[in-house]
Image 1: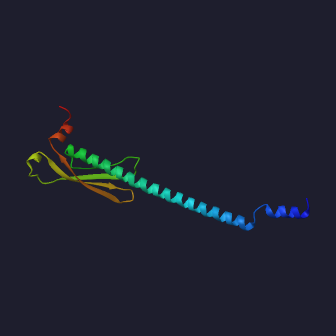
Image 2: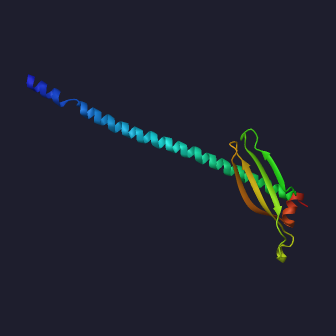
Image 3: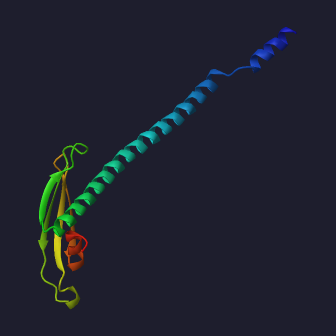
Length: 144
């Protein structure tokens, strides 16, 4: 092999410094985008988990309030135990006026406010209406 062919083979093989730097820049940009997307997805997951937990706790307070109203307990409060330290709940039910409709004569309506107190001293409130009639009273007393 002549010197010229060796020199030509050396010039053709390998990458130049500029090519390596461009490849590293493209790789770095891609990694930045991937890491940023991962971090954003993680933050969104944590926020969503917090909202879902709050909603689940509020729904459990609504169930407690409904059961309390059936037992003629128009207010109540408590906490959620060791799993949700610092969270507490309360509800207040206020009877509404009697209805004029004859089909609802035996039905008592209540305006209920449930409150979820968070550890950071923020409170979430949810207002709804509940009722008690002869059919729901049978749940309180059990089967005949």
